[in-house]
Length: 299
Image (cartoon, rainbow, N blue to C red):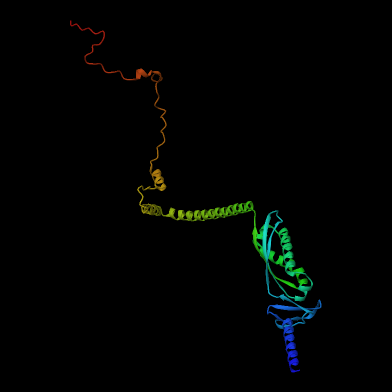
């Protein structure tokens, strides 16, 4: 009799241990447990720690409450200004209502992923290329609202959405590079022109000051010569001051105007009409020559 009681007690203990092992569940700190009894959801949500269910009748479903990082595959689309781009994004979301996340949607992760891809393509079509490249904060907010609106009914809250990368065609990259190069060249020319204007104003002021003191120009010339000679060149080019040329020009004597001919000195008409040959002096006779027609005999 005693042996039968001991055997029965051992059997009960073994059965109780097996039942406890089958009914025992452990819910982690970042999880929540949903109990389905005969397929019906119980209203109480099991918190973190040790909990018990009815084996064979209850089924415990654990839901992760952590923030989930889900990458969105690259989506190709055409922007509003007709540029083909490929955009990658990432979505951060978490479950706020475990019951709705399990009951309302079959797989909330897959649903959020598909909604994110659809919203990303919609954002690409509504935006311009400059907005995708420079105004990403506004696009992230709009993308977050588009995904969060249907996700709220699934017990999921979108924490944030970030656009990771925007891929452009090679032709568009080269065009943008040329545009940036042209813009920088324009800015460089404007800055150079502004510098020339300021330098010309300063030079004009310097010239005005030097014009009052001529010796200042000579001192500036000597400074230039010293600066050139410091380079240890074999050839020294000495500039000739323009002021010295002006000084020499002022120093030249003025030519007196031509005097008019006096009316009293009249020229004879015969002298005017005389040939040039008659006006020339006759050559002197040679000593050894005898004049033609002279008598050489003596009486």
